[in-house]
Length: 444
Image (cartoon, rainbow, N blue to C red; front, side, top):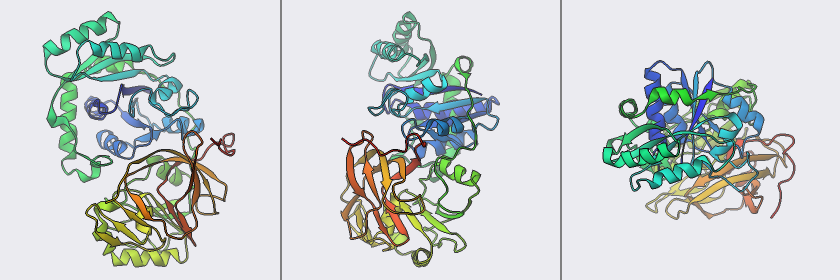
């Protein structure tokens, strides 16, 4: 398999729309292409999967041990080309040793992925070439193979940029015109999810059309390089049970594909159910998992879903239930929506959360479990992240779920709640550290 990385100098440069267009255009050519996303992101991989017809995995050098990264890159199932979409800017990550910072450049260096830079030139001319030159020479082992000029207003705009790039020996691999029709709809956590867009196929077709017009597809295929495939079958986190009931609908959609597929490979059976359709977790399962998502947008429906709530309480009386982020909000006593209206939730934990009182909480997290449970014994460490706007307005009286630290090892204190067989927090799981890494985190 060959591979390349689509990156940029900053967020909002057009990486996702260009990646989706490129994936669609190459698939039309008959290229067996799959995609991956650098860093923690639930939304973009679903668009990748829609564009390629194949699963898209997250690759995170901070949260994932090297063996997990290698296994996910090796899970190509006969793909000819792997296209990795960067998060943020190419070198944006945390203050960590090179190779484990979470930056997309770590992936480029580890797997030898040539970088195709997306330059948003909407407010620039020749300065764009200086930006590209700086990125191309910033770190040894990271190779910028060429650039795509995005948001170009016309030939007079593109020509001086291309000339300056040529003088620096940086090829132009495409020119994408400014076109509002290519923008994807957004909401507070990013793009509106792929599964919520009834016109998604038409949108993807528009992006593929634009890529066929604006990208030098043959040249892009030429810059791709061979990727060394890792050992398959490595699981990021041990399955929490043998038969796992997982909530899945528009309110509960944030579960990383590498976790779900890893649990299946490890022999676990998965049973999906929809709280929005007032379905209870299947009684034959031995653990229930409520992923994150957008419960704040569906609070009234969830509050009135009596079969779901009663079934969840009955399940929790005999088997473990865990909630991640949005799932944690639903396990509490109440959820206050954006309009300040309070909605009764499952009451299996005693906290109250609010989207009316909101603040961005974001960052990598290194957690140590405080109790034996579905994710391991007390003192087990797991890495992941937080990304939410909701706040806890009443912490309740439950025992804390875990001790949490940030990416630098700074103690953030206890997090989440646990009562009986029920646990939850705003923390999203990505992977367990390797055995060599599984020592107490550094304090600061």
